[in-house]
Structures are given as structure tokens and as C-alpha cells.
Amino acid sequence: MVQLHQQVLRTDLAGMPLEWVDYRCAARLYFLDQVAYACGDRLFLLRGGVNARTKLRSELVIHSIIATHGAHHASSKRDGSYVPPLSNRTLFQRDDHICMYCGGRFSPRQLSRDHVRPVSRGGADHWRNVVTACVRCNNAKAGRSPEDAGMELLAVPFTPTHAEYIFLMGRNVLADQMEFLRAHFPRTSPLLKRAGRG
Image (cartoon, rainbow, N blue to C red; front, side, top):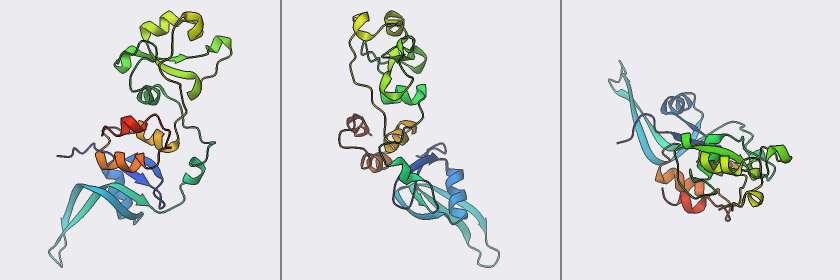
């Protein structure tokens, strides 16, 4: 049974993933006639009032993926210059909540953002210079490079594409939504294997 907090994937007309919306926002888009088409599984059936003349009750079916009309500037997110905003939540999701030094899996409270090249040594706060690290490993590395600290990185940090970022932002991504998003990942995406688990 689908819970009301289940997210709906919103795309543009060309099918470029844009964002996650809740069922209320999806219903509003249907009501405003902004939904061009829907695909994926049927998630919700919303029932309204009874029409006094026809005696029929209104119903609205909301699918897991909806494509909407309008200009969304999605084309700018397709080119190689797009850089999604960096947050600890999406960073931890990118690295699958695994410390990139010891390989342990941790809860978000036990994780931190580590700058591979420390900020004190000119390192920037961007996707290609940050990894998920448990608090213990981050403290052990301190203001040194991994080499200076005698630590080895388990994976090379990367900047997610827009579609990968949408995946990372999702909560409880359904199998049909996962399949849809995977089709927009680069062939070399480190997330492809993980996205196949859905």
C-alpha cells in the first residue's frame, strides 16, 4: 500500500527529470491542466465530491511520473556545465552512507563532509573535492591530504548530473521511477549499480 508521503517524479515534456513533488502538488498540477501525460504506476486515487447533475463522484488518478507543460530551463541542466547544489544529505547519498576511508556504513549523525584536499591547503568545497567520512576517520585525517595521513580513498569523488542529483534527492524511490531515472544517467555513472537495486 502506497503511503501519502510517497513522492511523484515530475518531468518536462521531453521527459527530463525536474523534481520530486507530493500528491497535493501533483493534484494541483492536474487541476491547473499542467500535466501533459503520465507514466509509471498508478500511485493515488483521490476522490472528490458528487456532481449534483450527473450524480457521479469525481476521481483523480495520480501516477508515479508526470510530465508537465511550461518552460523549466531543463535544457541548461543537460549540458556538462550544470553543477547541482552540494549538501551533506546528497553527499552522503552519493557515497551511499559509506565512509570513503574505512568503508563502514554509518547513519547520517555519524558522518561528516571531508575535503580531500583540505580547505586550509586551498581545497574547494565542491563535489570533486569532498567525500563522506565517518567522524573518526575525518578526525584522524585532520587537515592533511589522504596521502599525508596514510589513508586511501575507496572511490573517486564525482559531480552528479542533474538526473543523478534528482535520484539522490529522492526518498523511497519506486522501481518504475528508478528505471526512468537510470535511463537519464551517463553510461559511466557510479550510481548505475546502486540504482539497479530498486
